[in-house]
Length: 334
Image (tube, rainbow, N blue to C red; front, top):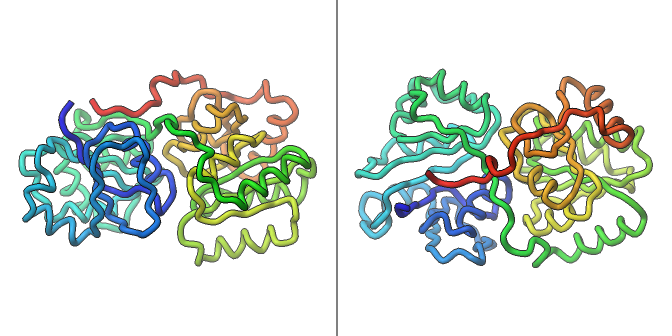
């Protein structure tokens, strides 16, 4: 196995993209991590024996050019981001006899960047990992040769104990809710593509037996967060946590009855696979391939979600379920 350097970020910020690199490092699949989002509260993977270098994008470009030690011994550089916007980083980077690999995580890769610029930047990569058929179609439309495309997932099972170093208020809240009965969990960035409002509407109108815990990440200064906050303020059965660590989220997830992911856009969903591994029932949209054992539905409307949820808690045997092989979902370098 050649020396691999991954460029992106580890938590914080927390989310699927950074959580993926965290697990890649914790499984020691790479020798070096370039974290382009320096912060004081970073979570170093406890089992990682390699090096983490914290640089902003400009510093990375400069050191790439002038510091031989940065890429010494590295044969493969894996660029791991969310959207095509991050590809602009590649504008000034020569390959220097290294193999370039790309993985983007967003379910919709449409971009305001002119198509000819994206096409030119994509030519720099020897291999491009796609997470969904929608991503594959995007790359093909951008002129990427089929031979460069390789299907992957962004999943690696948790290695260390997922309930260590959990925020105290999360522990107390989960224990309180468990003492009262059952609960569901939703998570993700504060964006309407996650359809969090569908779940909130469900718990405000129909679901009266269970409680709901919401974990939201990212920039919360938007109208969608204001909408969600307004709709949950008067419901004592809904708890909200903002920008918490993966361990805190997994602590709540592990004891849930149901994890809900009704996204209208998605590429995989690490939390879906984690929930299944915890023995939690999962209802997720069919917009991308889901981890085996996931109950799936077509997210056409709130009514379609409501019908699927009613079946899940009443007659789940008639729901569609993902039957893919779990071994095919574990990420590895070729």
